[in-house]
Structures are given as structure tokens and as C-alpha cells.
Length: 161
Image (cartoon, rainbow, N blue to C red; front, side, top):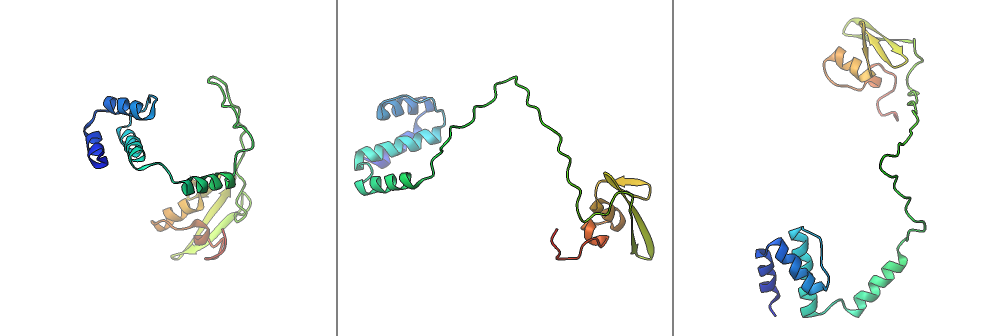
């Protein structure tokens, strides 16, 4: 029995023929249509039949590993059926501790101008526009992306965020 020759023949077979060959070798059919998977499984089985299965030592080691494995102690939770509504509650994001309270004006001297940014409940106001973040305000001012907290000196470089 030439294993290489048999595997080469598998590469030429259609998926339906591979499923038939799988059923012949494993004694049961398969619904798998993935050619690559079928070829690998059939090739493995051909090799195992020709050269023998796992050694007793390998079987013992596999059993040891299985005994040491963490096993699930509780059954998985059942999936909700289709059509069941799931209710979620809105959890507002915590306000960043680096930010001053809403209503505070942040000032920053930049290129000879005194910039003033008003801290809002949800965002920042600068020059009549509202921005979602300090970084967006800093980008508008500088024309390039930079960390808003660093730009407005609300934290020092290297400080934990």
C-alpha cells in the first residue's frame, strides 16, 4: 500500500467521492463538504491503517493530559430562543477623573493666542463649535492629531492615563 500515491489520488477526487471514501474508511458518513478537511482526515486514516495507530506510550500521555485538563463543572447556559427580547440597561460612562467639572473653562496659550475651551457635560466647546473630545479640539487647533490631555496640560507626559 503506497500512502503517497493514495493521497495524490485523493487530491484529484471530487468532494462527493471524498465523502464516499470517508464513509468506507471510517464506517460512517459525513456531511462535511470541505475538501481540504476531508483529504486530511482520509489521509490520516490511510496512514493509521497502513502504519499503525498511536503507540501505547502516546495513548498514556494523552490520557495524562486529559486527566490534568480543567474540565467544565457546569453545563453551558441555554441559548435564548429566537424572538425573545433581551432588555439591556443604559450604563452611562464614567466621567474621566482628569477632566474638570462641566462649566469649567480650560485656558491654554498657543502661538501667541490664549485659547479657551469650555467643558460641557458631553463634550467641549471651542470657537462656537462642540467637539466630542479634547483630542478633537487639539486637532482643530494644531492641524494634526495629538493627545488632548497633553496638549491642554491636564496630565504630564508619561503619567498613567
